[in-house]
Image: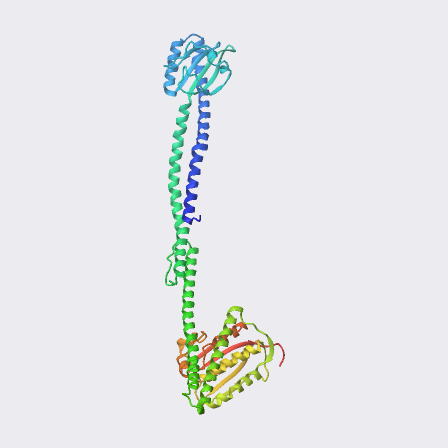
Length: 471
């Protein structure tokens, strides 16, 4: 069973508190009890020495009677809770400070033959004289270098137990206060760790449901704030991608539907005889033209898909660029004659060699020149030039046509993007040429840029690496 972070934190918190409580009330109790017991035994030693020095000498010198000694020891017991016996050398209890269950005239050897041989007896029970176990200290009393008797001090074990509990209660109160502090720390840690994760998880759920406008409000650690910002950025990118996909589908549907509609309509018209045989050739040519449009669109889509999935594969060779430009320009001679457009070729050297994929560069030049022709006015010119700068060759394709609106400059590289002028005048356009062009140039680790002024013209400039082969 999977548990949430909050549940795990609560379990860890409860386990830590329970462990500390058990440790304190078991190990702690034993430690305190032993410490108090040792202190009490040391205290009994001191009391026994005092009694021996102050009372026993007078007793043996017979300057104090057993009754008087018993009275004084009883008064001492009232302050110390220590019961005192005085035992003679034979083991007879001659003085007992206790008021109840007095042990006077009882021989202790009859109770425990080994008792007087000990120094300290722990937990001993004399049920005839004590209601509970005691700790007993046996202190021999000597006079004239002979053991004349014993001072025996009894302290109830319960007194030590009660004192131990007193100190343990103090520690438990401190532990309770510490628990409150620890609880505050736990709540704080949850709000700076667990709670932000909960909100981030909610954000991912919202994004998975296409609610890209959701903004997680995260406070606390900078790491979580940065993660939230990253998720928001990802959501924006996903929203843009989704919008792009919708536009992509709409554009491709439109670009496929138009020629298909023409092909279907003209083919049906030819088939049912609506179009006379004499003029069928004209409409068959239109069908072939629209078919070529579809073929070109499909090829461009496949090429872009290959670039996206496998990257652009380049076959780098060394070739002379100026002759390639001339050949491509000549291929547009027919359409240029129709629109009365001329080419101006300006090269910085007679022969210029570059290291690149000749087929890809040919495609780039074809797309740029074709684009320039589309947007050029009749009776205008297209300039194609190159310039060497360091180890780079910069190639320019410039027209003097309608230009690109300022707000559309960054969009010309988008797939299927067409300016209004393109949609109105150039139905041959697929809106993919410039996208493919940029992919090819970037695959060469080079750059391409656009400079355009609406109503003045457009210039595309891209770079290629110059070959080390001398011209």
